Image 1 (cartoon, rainbow, N blue to C red):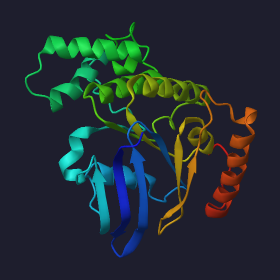
Image 2 (image 1 turned 90 degrees about the vertical axis):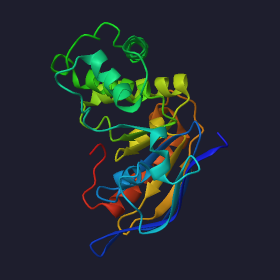
Image 3 (image 1 turned 135 degrees about the vertical axis):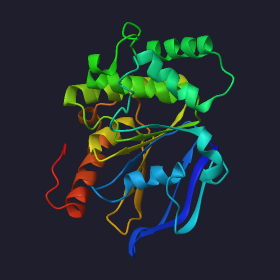
Length: 257
């Protein structure tokens, strides 16, 4: 985990005379699971758009795998809040779609075999021929995760991927994404507004302030997984501090919102 894959160095972002980022600096190392946590509207997802060369910074510098984002986009794959599956393609064809769009010269049979392996990894070995309308919300997100893995990225960017799911499904998906991360060794940057989610998943939490946004704190978490917050004095202390901070940053904040 010593290789630096992503670096934000005093990054500023402005839109229409509004300053969004104020000299944000942080890094992400190879193999890390990093959660970007902050109040609503602070620009958490903006960081992912910058990494993926979907948004240019106003000041400062960003590198991904040692290069500017416009040169390193092939090292990335996305999982969004919405699975964004093609409704006319079944699960396996949605996974191969990622490979079709990114790779040249790979045979259909090789892509299909790889898609089968990935769908098995995410627990959908019996659902490969199902169309998105036949899958639950959690199952559709598993397909989206398999599609992201299919292009063999170094880094997976996840933008609140479980926020639209019910509580029990969210908890199950958190366990599954940790298992997938441990199996693949990918670097994951995971945006969330959920304190419990960040404490359950992350090696490090990058806590963002209100706009103009800066990094308030970086929290390192060494607790073994799977984590149960109420069973850990360290995690409970972090949660108490974060809840109090969120209440100061976001009037009306309630846990679980």
